[in-house]
Length: 115
Image (cartoon, rainbow, N blue to C red; front, side, top):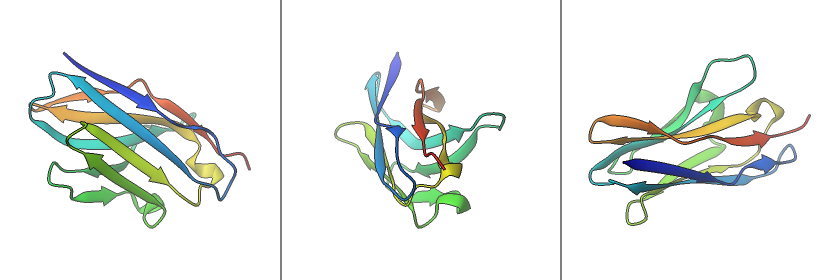
């Protein structure tokens, strides 16, 4: 069984920064791609950023240059550093991890950037 526990998030002023984390525990053999998705009210869940097992990242156009995804394979943890936050970044952020070709999801963490 694989468990994902997210931390961080909350209320952040526009232009500010926040880092969210996702720790993977349980059967973590062969952790593959790790990623962050977000879902704003009334919108579909969208990919924010992902990172491969060898550390290659990719980003949604809307966050390029502002967000940085990273991972610590020794800790089975993925991070999302969010800078220059905007009100449109307000959403529930979900961690997703592929373990042995199966995707697992975190419970989500709220990030709110008031306008």
